[in-house]
Image (cartoon, rainbow, N blue to C red; front, side, top):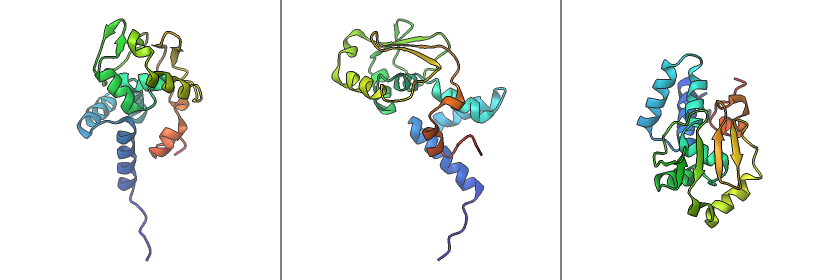
Length: 163
């Protein structure tokens, strides 16, 4: 039995669903982020990825303070994260350049955070984040460099930059 080639629409839908799953975002929220990216100047795809990367839960994950995005989302929701010295429990908060994100004092000593930091030491560093592991503090120093995003994330999402 021969299979028909997937349509372009089908490929795009799979890419979108993979991105949604990867970042742990529901359809309505993803649509709002996409619409904002489409209204912004420049490439919609690049704007979309930058918006997703600058979410607070993703920054906590990328900094290495959580082993997974789901864990980082829960840490933010449960109030373990401070942004510019203020407790913030909104995972979808969009970080800006210069924002300082840190873990609360008691959270830093938790075994799960220490484990996540050990895992993060083996990962590639994000050049757009300045991480101070000892103080459990990260600063957003610049816009996310899309060419420096984990290529495995984009390939799994079907959005490799070579297409």
